[in-house]
Image (cartoon, rainbow, N blue to C red; front, side):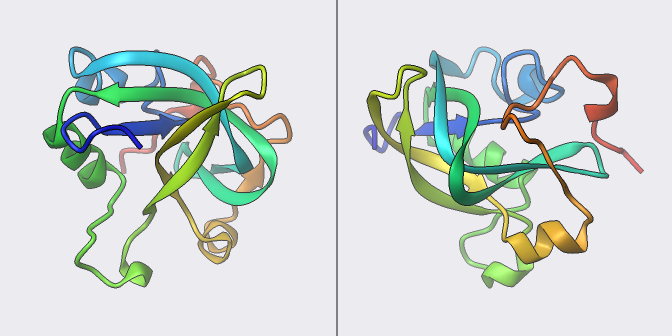
Length: 145
């Protein structure tokens, strides 16, 4: 993982460049952006955002190097993650994952927000077979109700 002062995060949905929350949470707060992938499965949730579940497939996204820990705190708020809460009370868990470049070369480790498969099933998540969330699809906008 990168230094504590510049955390790295793998993003795969609304925080990707061009995603719904990119401007609010990332723009001007990221020092480096690289296309990347992690092992897992990706699901579309009816509320209009995706969920990463650990697994054997590939999930496409971006490896972001953040300017500082304050940016990570904003991500935690967005992803409804609090390290002081019981994991069952968090929507996502922030976990360290191995990240790979598009060509399969190891890129080191980074934080990622992962959801438990039981929670995905409760929310009637639908597998995204190619592991790539389309930020340009209007059906992927988060539900604000």
